Length: 317
Length: 244
Image 1 (tube, rainbow over the protein chains, first blue to last red):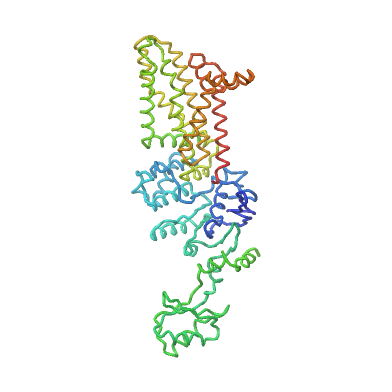
Image 2 (image 1 turned 60 degrees about the horizontal axis):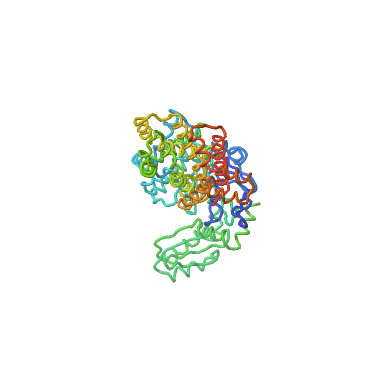
């Protein structure tokens, strides 16, 4: 379990993290979202015990990260931003070093190291120095290092940054597989990742929490929530049909994807009436889709723009 | 204690994982030999002692020890591994001491590899091996003091070149403090107490005292305190500068 209370970090005049309060329970995967420089990494560094807070507090499994730092560090696995590791070591040496520093001894250590090697598919690079590895492997070594002691709490700072789509998929699977009994915090600025791994998303900007909700709830805030998109050859006819449906608030045309999108009035369903009317009018439609909402649009609205303030109020309430 | 050993082992192994260790050892041995035989006139003196060998150690260390010390913390900071190291369940002082001891042991290995000169002098004559042992001890302690300064300065910057140059300068000041040149400058106007204090801070004074074969507790305490002070300062600096 992770708990922060009014956690703040100040650098001179800059409030890097400004009064962040949240709680993550075992079984939850918290996605930390925010533009660059929002304070995501600083918050994670404080929870991991690398930086000490200017004010406020954080605790991991009941251990305060400042007053009871060693106990807190023992139950935490941490992947720092950029997955740093000692370049001259081989993954095997490196993992043994971390396991030893984590207090694992003898057979137990060998067994745990083998387990994480297995889990992250590091067999083929074990005897190569880490600096010669590809970015994907370096990241996987960093992840292996973070889970070698089977921690109750896992803090991963941009775990999939710089990975190719296959590697991203693997890392997400790994996080999902571990999610059951662990408390996990993942920072990212890849929005699809939030839907793929997180049970909860916290959006922060300028050091403050602006939204705290499930990914589905965030999507529901999108103006595209329950919108209907379609592709057709008879553009004028389709536009005409969409504008005749009573609950349609606006119709947009994307010149790049050549799709029409009808946005509903808040809380209304427009999929059924639109599809019926299109059929009635005999307008050829090659594709018709009900949208659940656009995460990138929600993210943009929350992190700049006035709407952000309202949502912050909502998050606090 | 076991955490210090863990950090120590990793650090020491890392020296030998790259060519740095071998380059350092070879250069150290070559320079030590060159100084002893060409500048120190080891043979021409016709005396069975290692004075010409040990006399040059302070000057050798002035450039070689900062080269070992410069990477201690600046490399950790540059590569970001400092974040990894300090979020392991080890304390700051365990990390500082473990890394320092590894670097010191590494210099100790280089120093120990000068043993052929000890064999040579024993083959050629019958030197006072007690004095030679004391000189080795003094030399090793002095290297530790240089290194502790290097550790602290390396914690101040992520740039190894800056760390190297600053360490050389600070070490140079600590060496020169015992030179007549500096002491005369002060003795002209400063009270005798201050002059004594400055000369008391000099590595040379204490090294020379031990190298004479007299292992005085005060000289040991001096090096011990110097090392402890600079290591403490390292920990403070690391803590202050972690964020940037």
